[in-house]
Image 1 (cartoon, rainbow, N blue to C red):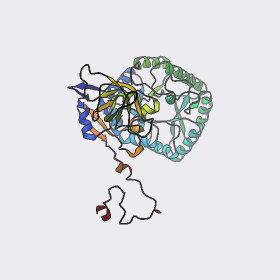
Image 2: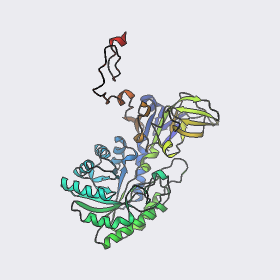
Image 3: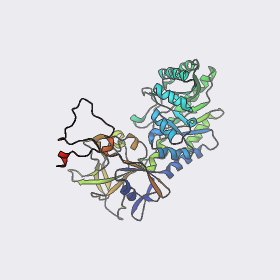
Image 4: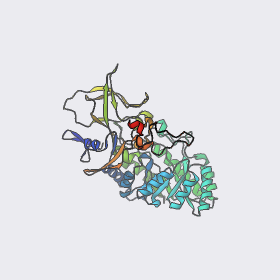
Length: 440
């Protein structure tokens, strides 16, 4: 966890969360740069001496300040869209350290990545491979390719974040891989460089990794016998974070496993962690709007909702909830159903959660909110989009401002067939001056 109480107030890296909330209003996401650096350093240290490229999975948290923090600490980037590629480059990640994954790359995105000179495309299907070859020939630059293999290995994680089973949409089926590699070798604008696999997210045991990696290495041997040389093994990501009381992933054991399996092979290794690097760095600070009496227990109604942070609703995910003002020693704990303001019964952060007594106006923080939080937010109900703040060694900066409804609709226009407003009708266009009639 990235926060601790000091002098009765919850702080992150020496900055009081109440001070941040006063500067930005609530809800607000807060990210601790020191936690990210520590996580990245631990991963790099586990593989000390190995030829390893760490590519941060931008989809977990795409804030420029987050990408830049990790880039300055030595990470590249793994992107899944042209927009994420643009973000990674804008944050200072060299193109030569960027991997482009995803099942649905467009021709424009392929050309964008080729022209930037990225490290590698992770290709997931035959149609994508053929299209990438056509785009690469047109651009006049060979496309460095690792085929994403689906090893048909269950990740022992939530069904909605498992990606390496036979029926999942990702990757090329293992038993078709040899034929697809042979086809790729015949495409003039394709440069075969590696194998990629990624079996899911929030994995905390080594067994699924071992099963998938053994299959990948067996394929490398088979490809070698067919005259196709593989120089890179992209191990994907999926390293879990701690949300509640899960056992932490054994990084040293993971690195030892990879070394054992790849011993004697001349392979550059690539890993693509996202959640592992940023989840535990983040908190969502939100304010209690009401404490509403209920039939079974009280409802704690927050100003953050499923539009702000959808993980608890989408994955039934647990996030600890901490009062920003430290409870008195021995304070009783009472059960609450913790909800947001959205007009959906799904808008539920926690049911029957025991918390110290709280009242309207109090601030609370949801922990481990640095991954898949702000990036999955929406404008549902036209509520303000939460600000994002980076904290680093006693200082903080607003790195993405709060977006108010008037700004959300500012880019919208009305079709020309709507009749013009008359002087007697108040204008609803953002920022427009009131009409004379409205002033009367």
